[in-house]
Length: 401
Image 1 (cartoon, one colour):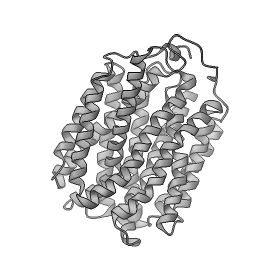
Image 2 (spheres, helix red, strand yellow):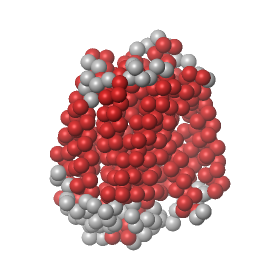
Image 3 (cartoon, one colour):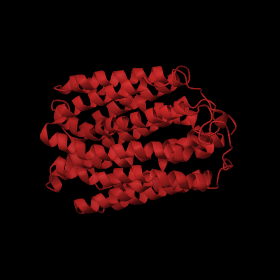
């Protein structure tokens, strides 16, 4: 197996672990800590907010360090650091302690996206499918968090759901250092002066500003949609699948089923992005989100499960689109920082979603949440209408790598 394929495998494992760790607490809070610590779901889940704030804010320094030092070195820090923090989370005895541990976990989790995604597209001409494959692994991490955590809650206790994945991540980090290394990459040349500036060379002036503005706007709203669905779905199933999910393990299995099926949407979207206009693909994905979120209020059991699969297919399908757009317009030497800025918007939206979910659930229930998500998906659809009809697959800067 080539070095590039081995590295790609590690990057995929990293994406899996990144999303896995950030959602273990969502299942633990929904299915066991509310009883063990005597707090309501709305009271407990805000303790995850600091971790998601760190997930967003720390993307900027992580991207800067990666561009200035070594992306591979930062990946090794990610694997070992997030594993250690997960083990520390298992030691928490109070909500405040678990909030601090989740914050530390968020600091290391912030490394992956501004560092791992640029490594995924490094030295590739077609980026849509590799990003989509990598995205599938991230979504399987989302899915497995609910499944594995639910199983451990039933059989070994919630603390083991943090301990054993932490051990695995540390071992993966050691293997990464041994097989891949942490030496700086060969793409550290100073930015070249080109007619379009150093960040991108295919666009100038207002078209570039407009594309970035649309990317950031849809990223923010998409972050709210993604977090609201992935974080809340175990609790939604706990409430809505009363005839189907009778234990924590079954709730985890249904969440795993939905997230795993939805992950396949990224492969389809990645394939389409390499062959069709990003604008047309984005329009279709946003329209499907709006339709299925609007259908969800009032549904239970099989109807709720089927519609959940549909809106998660659309929600997950959006993820690779913005990554591909950034990869096409950002030059290599700036790419980690541009991705970091894109992900700080994403994960700032994620952190804002947690108190929003708690507030809406406490006052109105999940029907109102799905109505709000349908409105946000409609705004995404309207914004995408302003994208250029065609965006080149590779910029001059990227082609010069």
